[in-house]
Image 1 (cartoon, one colour):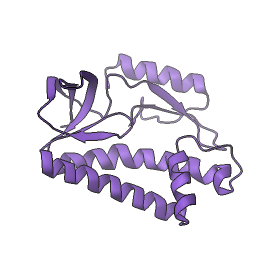
Image 2: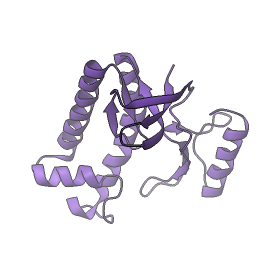
Image 3: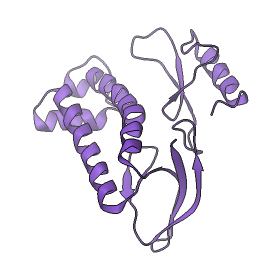
Image 4: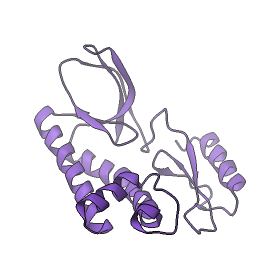
Length: 182
């Protein structure tokens, strides 16, 4: 079962708040499969549409780093995403092996355990959602439906995961919270 921990660095006095607390390779694989790969799909879609890579859309948002890497490396978008995810997973895995613990923030930034870190609270979670996460309503480019997410957790209410309007997706998110599915 995934866990989050409230982390403070006593040396720098930085309060990180709650972070995903990964302590075993299987937990890292689960986080990567569920959270990172979901985020990768959004980044890929955004980068594929952006003007920086010759697409019809505007400037890259979530996919800006991917678009930039693709352009400077001179390789395909697929190869860039593969390299980015491989490097990220390898770095996280090496940090876990070296320190015994990896803390990951909502943006995918990570660091390992060190002496100056103080763990103030640890909680088991049922979905990959941090207390600071907010609902996101998403519509794919040229899409007709709206989807809702908390962190990387899809909102599903009565077996329904997509809605015709932004307002319906928002209402489903509120019901999701009220039913205690977080």
